[in-house]
Image 1 (cartoon, rainbow, N blue to C red):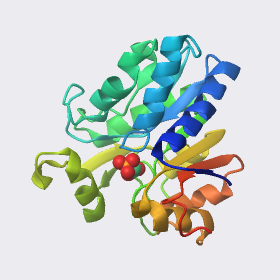
Image 2: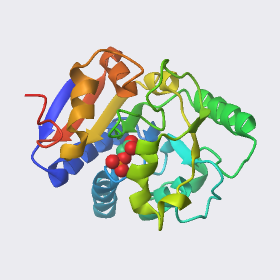
Image 3: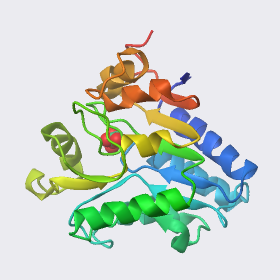
Image 4: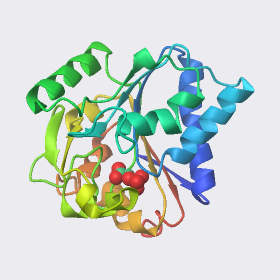
Length: 242
Ligand code: PGA
């Protein structure tokens, strides 16, 4: 694991965007694994600004997102489909047909998940997978458990995740209780992994990811076994690591 310390959120976002942009410049038709949540928004904004300036071109890029809430339609403002358009896709020249998010609107969990596994495998898995990390060490919606997950599957969100994500909903009761998420094994197939983290609330999870035992109790800890994993985190998120 390579750990890159950023001064603050802006600096973290710019450093992460630089790494993603380098990937797109080196391989214009690359496959990007993308993440939602508050943390990557700054990197998406920076990439969109560089696209506007003509520095990076997404015309041939294809993307696969980690997860989606079960039961939300694609145009629901709380869905991750909507989030990706609002925060990234609508601001760059990506072909929307080349963007993929698990189909939360399909109530048949087994079908939605196996369909997603098929298309991610057919794409050859991401060249670069961007990840946030949950306060509880989750990656995607792979929550702490007694085993590491494999392919895309339906999960029950933990109370801590429901609580953390409720800030984006009118009330905690509106937070969906289930999601479809890419599995840990699939995440590990990416050729490069880029984790972004900021703020003191992530300090314990970041410490456990980088230096704790490799255990499904902290799903992100498996990234220690990846041969090309870069963590870009601000000083607050790295405060327990020095
Ligand atoms: P956040 O979420 O970026 O909104 O903190 C990260 C995550 O839960 O993976």
